[in-house]
Image 1 (cartoon, rainbow, N blue to C red):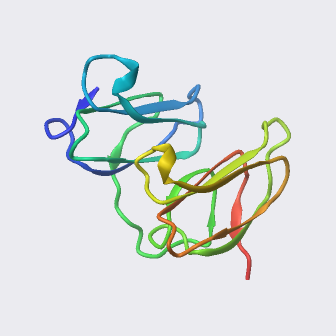
Image 2: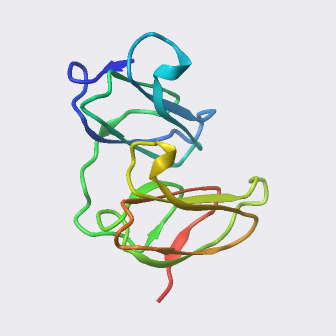
Length: 159
């Protein structure tokens, strides 16, 4: 468990979930009571995918399991037009536009994606989402803060 303001400062953090992990679970906490109501937001992230979360100044703590090492987010020099599973920041890491996925691998349960207004992990930040069984196309807007996907394969910007 990480105390916000003591062990970590508010900001955006990133971890690449180890491919040999069972999976990654993280939670932002309002207090240290251990009560269910203390969970402000949480998520499960697939092995091999990128986990991204914003810790707020009002958070008391952050807890995670199986996620790998969390580091402060550093934007790349140029946004990419191809990416895989995880949560990616629009205009920082990926370009806005129309993307097509290769679709789930044969052993995957399907593809899930979200367009997000933040990376705090709360349900209110989901702009749009879908579950699909094969390749799909999504329009990622320049006004979207982030895009998250799991089990969708590789996303490629469609010219």
